[in-house]
Figure: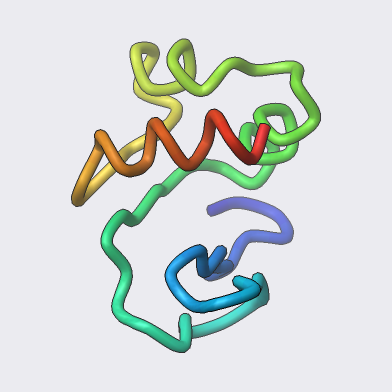
Length: 75
């Protein structure tokens, strides 16, 4: 949400994976929602995912165990 917000996906289900803007090519197991500013902070290492979640800056729907394992690998 916010400036430069939109729907982005990271596909770790298919061989080779993919990432992009718009509707994901496969059904999502996990959906994260957050402001675009907090998203940039999280993926540049300035905001820890756990802190974002605990402070309600990150909303998660779906398999949170899968999300935690995937984020750890990506970050």
